[in-house]
Image (cartoon, rainbow, N blue to C red; front, side, top):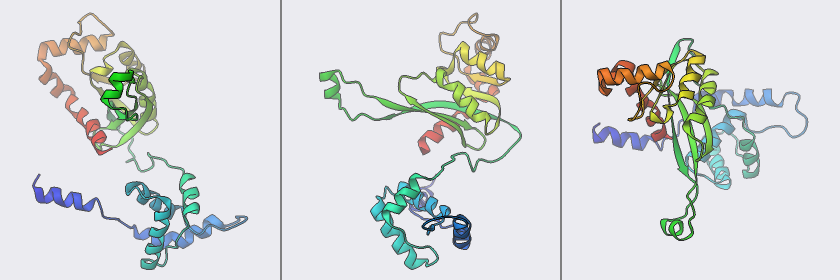
Length: 257
């Protein structure tokens, strides 16, 4: 990619996009929210609070600064009223967030790629770790990503001692609530008889890279076929045949995260 295009992408990260429908519907949304309500009426529509929540988290903005943001925005767009920081905090914390709300709808069978990554939680340095034996701990994120749209269709959060195989059932069940899963693509961490048996019971095709020392006579029939194919065709030909290369979609999702 040319540097000019990369430069433009970095610049656009700072743009704040206001949906015109927010301005048009704010007053009507407030009327609906306050209809039959007892006590103090709402002054900010939920859609506007969602926008302010996004601004806060994108720009790491404390609630008091967020109040200042609403004041400035009100001077520019009078239809959007200012808010106080304590009220904004309460409204944002009460938001019901559905990360799967805007997934592209389809009845077609889809392929998903699964993987996990760790997020460091402890800031202990190497010296402290060596001196006191303190182990660094991580929060582990498990993603299931639809390979054709790169949408995260399921997510699990665990401690760093949960193996990927143990997290897979929750990922697959979560994905099945959003899409019709036909194929699961995973790396060697998912090379387990439990994984093959789970997917077979659900009628889902496994595309899992076997470990280097995988034996032909070990595991369910689907696993043995995979090992045999790789020995006969070679890894590159097998990966191309089975579409294993599409697993990079989940890697891209972690980079975005």
